[in-house]
Image (cartoon, rainbow over all chains, first blue to last red; front, side, top):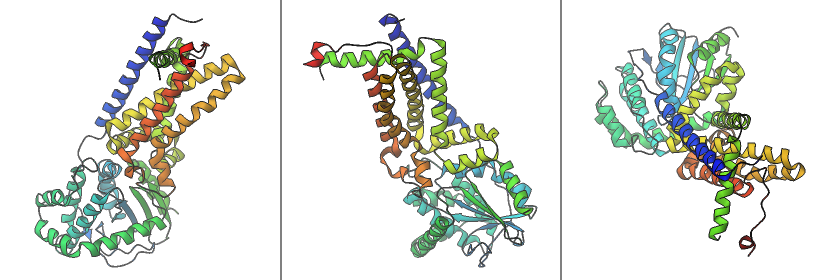
Length: 245
Length: 182
């Protein structure tokens, strides 16, 4: 049976209000989902110029953990990627505590700048910071890396501009911002082309976003891939599976 | 378009939006369609992640939805996420209206299923485009689009609204006025 027009109009208005409330509620909820800060505590880092059995050339990549860890976790990320930030905040601390500090896993940080030009700027600066600290105090890389992810802003807002990133670098103890700036100017192009080679290699591994992880057992050569900021228990399961493969 | 034709479109649009709220059953069906559409759109923003999470255990669906909702908010902003919600609700209304039309008009109504497809596809592609393009090897392609694809989402919603303003209340037949025909 048809209803009077005024009733239909009232319902349509109610529907409109409902839609607006639903949109507002979801948007507000989403804005609160990612709050909270990650803690970065000292952890061992080392440099290497070897290639792994999986085909990753470790030259120039920060490596967290002990050199003789039986499992490698290759971690592709972009400093502008919100999902990488989520992983850094919610999963990485537990992973470090339970598997890196205990010597089971070492994490190889690989830049995968794909979101914009500023992603490449941040990636090149990452490599420059690593070059600057890797010989004397490699663990100084970690506070810098965490500080940049903590400062992550909206893509294209300018937060990842060279000057802003240098400002962040100045606030991190043990990292010489002037030396990083010099490295950016003098070796920027060379580093950029090496990062582009890493991006091409990532494509060969079927990596098309970030964060992406490949877990590799150096003894058995078993490997597995995890895509996105998955919860800690998914990493726990993957580690057990690769260890028992 | 004359003033009276515009008025007729607005009146039909209001009737289409009022239809799902006429009974509790229709409202629930509309809400179910809207929620299902939202889940589908959000999960498809990062299909490889969603498939791994849901493939491991369907219990991860809430984790995946929350994580991807937060990720979508930070990637396309409040406006982009709001457009996805509006798109999901409008899709719910369009599907309920189309269902009502099919049940009421039979074969004639079935043709309306085809008329709603362009809007659904256009906006759906924009909403889940990042993930699908990523799967196809064009990571970051949606990021290069105007307003991160929000313009395309808005276009899709406009198509759905256009469809609803054309079909109106699915249980009513309207005769074109002489003004419309002129």
